[in-house]
Length: 191
Image (cartoon, rainbow, N blue to C red; front, side, top):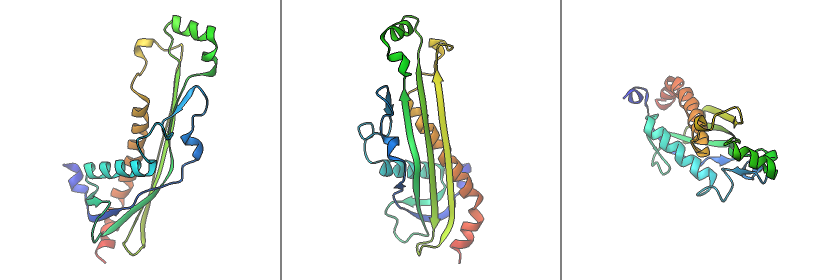
């Protein structure tokens, strides 16, 4: 119930975030990689999916009294930009040489690299467009498992879990900034 103590008592209209992420983030960087945000890897549009996940997170953590995409008579409007949202899974190019691949597999040596970044910027404004606050959250990860790690201790959780964790970390930064601005936002609501 700690979130309820900090809840900002406002009805918030959520606008779909705009996607300003680099187009290269949605493409595989090589034949030995997979972009988690490529069109074939996602179940919909990045902007819509990230906006939906943001609404779910803010609702679950009680940031605002109500938060909806179709909020009638809102106190605040939440909009924003996706600057980066990508995850990439790859294997080293040398592993694609047949004898190297055989040797790696013969010794149960896992070789995989995960990298990604989430960079979100959110804006809270009044319904008439007056900006009350801009909030930014960023998180990235880069992890390589190589021959120095034991197969049985390799972190096997899926690549999307790493990207989800980066999203959660970035959104947590934004929530913290909004809670720090709570008094300023309340003052703006009571004008």
